[in-house]
Length: 255
Image (cartoon, rainbow, N blue to C red; front, side, top):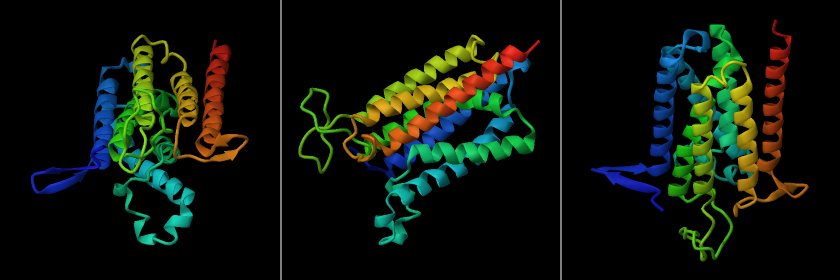
């Protein structure tokens, strides 16, 4: 693993660098997609994409860190100086999702944009950004899987046995989800009905995350044999089903 590397006289954290790359690449691609989209399907302009992602970044970082701190409060109450040290790792994506969606919703409401169409536009780029972030987790050595003797196991510092590279598995799944969502957008099949792209994104990610969690080696069971992240995944999947139901209902009620 390479949690840090040097660039001249500066030492950089791989996790932070890849998180920044995820934000910049996702924002650029989302703004380019907005410019290329036909006016009838354009949810927001390129400049609004940049504004939205800036707002969502702040909300996402706050949500991801708050989620992590609350989850490990027994540790942070003894070391409060570490609460804001997110560059040491400790950002949970579901917290980032909730925080960024909340902050983005406020922006969308203030600009009087369509919440569902904006969510549909941003869904594939959220998947791509998260995929890049998972590479950062791999470089950091966190979010690892159970011990394995399979040929594809990887050795992490501090682990006596190879472990399942769950970070790379999730990254691969997210990249596939990004490709599928973008193809659906390009062909218009996921843009004709607001809520469809974002609904499928939430459902697909909930299923992916639930499966990956069953391979994790750093999680504990919370209830009914499920980890906390699997329980949250159930709620996220239900949210995706609600979006699809809203989309179908709008289609049925349209003249």
